[in-house]
Every structure is written in C-alpha cells, then in structure tokens.
Amino acid sequence: MEIYKISFQFPSEEKYSLTDQIRRSSRSVSANISEAWGKRRYPKSFVSKLTDAEGEARETQTWLEFSYHCNYIEEEKFKYFNEKYNEIIALLIYMIKNVEKWTNFNSKE
Image (cartoon, rainbow, N blue to C red; front, top):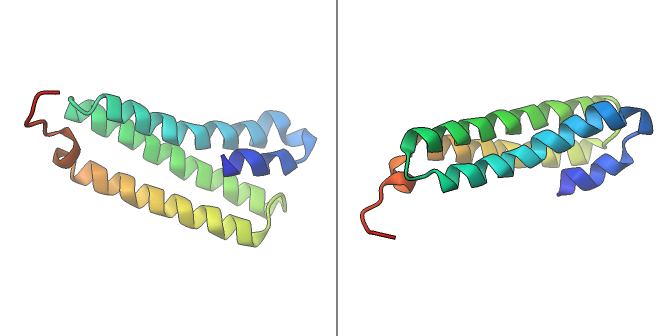
C-alpha cells in the first residue's frame, strides 16, 4: 500500500508505464503469497507461487530503482523500500527452502 500511495507522486507521463508497472508488481507479491497459502496442501504448487512472489518482489525493486534514478522518490524512501523488499525476499526464500514447515499436514482440517 505504501508503494501504491507514493506512486501518486509520479509524473502523469508515467501513468501507463512506470506507475502501472510498480503498482502491478508490488500488488502481485501479496497476491502470490495468498495463492501459495491456499495451495499449501500441494508442496510443488506452494513453492511455485512463492517463487512467483519472489520474482515480483525483485521486479518491484527494479521499478523502485528506476523511480529513484528518475528522481520520483527520495533516496531515503528508496532505501527504506529496498530494505523491506530484501526482507520479504529473504523470508520467501526461507519458506521455499523449508517448504515442509508449511505444507506438512499432520492433522485433519
């Protein structure tokens, strides 16, 4: 949501390019995590969706870098968001490497 909010500061000529791209990729991270959680009974599907979320997080970092270098966001904001996305990526990688912690169902639900 924070990225969505700051994207309103981008110039109007970026509306159909950078603004749309950064909004789409940042939203897709959480959407893919939600889909992964719904598929956690199937480890390969779970990992696939988490991998998609990681890719979208890395794409968002790229758009943040463009935003920073085009002077659409300040260095402080760029560093903040980049750090947060590094944390998200690290957690996703941890979940992928330890898939059995989230996909191993011992009890009936």
